[in-house]
Length: 477
Ligand SMILES: [Zn+2]
Image 1: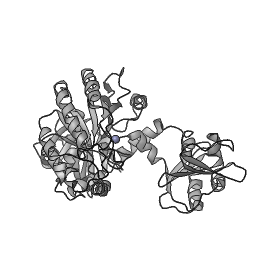
Image 2: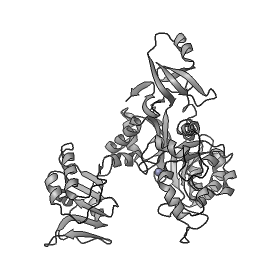
Image 3: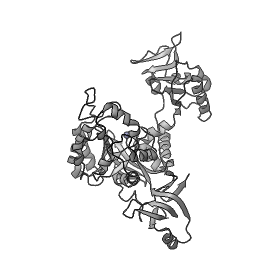
Image 4: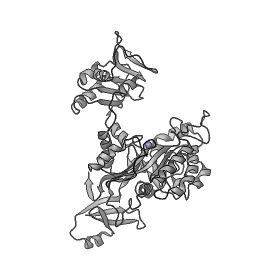
């Protein structure tokens, strides 16, 4: 198959006119006429732009799939309208299966009645936009074992009728009683999350934890993985697991640790304090990450560590300097790298390290940065300074934290919302979503368009992905 258009090879060749695929490999790259002559009579497809297959270098596909399955009630203020939306779902979901939703804001606390009418044979649980309250039908309350005898839990309350029976509305921690009865996400959610990524033009994603490996292994065994999956295990779950490939699409590759929390809850660990005097919250102790990380590296795993605050980044640089001699196969990974002090920038260079960033988070977080770190905006989202370290950048979304929409990352990288002089070029941003991400995975023969590389491509029209080629198979929407 011959694909022509603006081919961004991400190699020293720069751009080309066409790429020729043979089976699941790229066979040739170059001028269109030349390739037509060399491969006469081949099926050919013309596109605006062709890039190496996009990676989302940081996702939680199980939780993304779960989020996609929730009924979106954003903007709904009337319980009757919410109930109508539930009634519409009922026709699509088998009786007995849960209907869940999120996003409404009501004036009052409706009873279960509207939901009982809308979904007499399905348990229903909807949550308010701020997640501080929830609305359930009778089926759901029965499934959770709620009755007049159920006491209000600490930090929560059940709204009750005159007989003391829960009426269907739950405040604060009373929602936990219901959530405990809802099914845990499983294979269907993982598949849904991965399929959504594939439909957005990604050919690979890097799973960053919170999903049982067995689910991915089941998909791999039955050839149901819609993209290549680089897998990081939770730090509690790696011992006894063999690193390596499960088929051609799943690599069990790394172990994930956390140095700190996040900016929004002021748990990102900072060198300088927040305006309230706190410094954030260290999570896994650095000595623990060093010790466990060394062990994981010796067993053939990579090491992936979440670090958001300036102190977290600084401490992790110390740990990674110590681990560097053990990181021979694939690079160590620092996830987020959201806030970096000037004096720490020179310490990145030369480490066997890849930097996994989510520029799109700045779209939401710019206001948080100004609020929590006034005067230190220049330390946040330093895309350009980190690019200048010479280490590979790998871009992702952290879905479900943000929608895995590549255009949001391009937008945020080309026009950083903090306006702090950290803009990248389109070519750099796309490199970080393709070649940079492949290098971060340790997949050194991928993420570029050159002879011999796997035929994984993303196809673009009108400035956005409209399809892909995965292992030589063309999918156009
Ligand atoms: Zn994450």
